[in-house]
Structure formats: structure tokens, C-alpha cells
Length: 222
Image: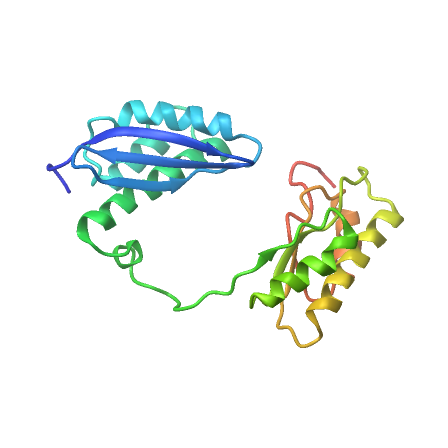
């Protein structure tokens, strides 16, 4: 691609309720896609991608490492979740372009495949405990063996005993539907609204054979 094509358009496209995708188009009509989602900050990341686009327009899309260095280290202030998400979306789109130009999957450009199959889960909500079992059963019927669910609704800052008991009961009901023979982990719980780490430890130590996403907020000190 070097020296034969240029970037003509860089777009950041929000998709409800939380996603942000990056689309990069070249003069030869190739289109590369990347994801720059950062939940709760899509508009902020979009602004960063738009600013990166001003630099990328007219550039060679094949100089992926060069662009990455400029976008991550070309300014005085560096890093952070917003910039990292924006750079990630751009970087993915550039690799997508290179793979399309060469006619190969991107993983072949990055050292080859490391697996030939991957386990997938189904999202079952969890805000309404009464519906969890039915939603899990529906995922099992289509062949999935793992699910992800909300651990709870919004919890108090410290997490009362009743709230933590509710989380454990919700995970237990999911495990009951999945059955005792399901391989670990068969449930993944999103605990992004969890209380302080001490409360999270008390809760998740009782949730056998379940993995947790964001078991405590990293911004809260113990």
C-alpha cells in the first residue's frame, strides 16, 4: 500500500446505546473498520478521532506503526482511556485496510492464528431477577453454554447485606439453569455498579464458578 494510496476520509460513527466505530476510506475505494467504544464517553472519543482524522487525511494508510507513534506520542499529554480508545479504533481500521489490500486475514499479518475456535456467551440482562432463568434457557436452546448478566441493579455505596445476598441469589439461579455439568466459567457477571472492594470480595467469594467483570470501581480507594 505504501506510496500508492492515501486516506481520504476518517469518520467516527456512534451506534446506540454505547458503541463507537471508526471508518477509514482511501482514494482507491478501500474501507477499513475499527471499534473505539468507551462506554459513557462516546462523544468525547469521537472528538479525539475527528482530531486524529485531520492528521491522517492525505497520509499513506500503510504506515500503520508510524501513525501509531504519532498519535500516541506526538503531543505533550499522552495516554488515558479516551485517547487509547480513539487510537485503538484508528489502528484497527488501518490494519483492516492492509488486510483487504493484501487479500489476507489480519491475524496472518500479526503472527498467525493462536486458536481455531472460541467460546462465546449470550447476554441475558439480569436487571429483572424473575426473567434471568427464562433468558438463560433461551440461550441454551440456541447452543450456547455460557451467559453474561448484570449482577444487580444500582447498589448503595457500601453494599448492604441484603443487596449482596441478592447478587449471590441471582448468580445461583443462573447456575441452576445452566446445570452442574457446565464447564467453568459458565456465568460471567457485570458488576460495574458494585460497592466498595471489601463488599465485592464478600460477594464474589460466594459466587462459585462465576467470573466477574469490573468487580469493583477502580476509582474508589479501600
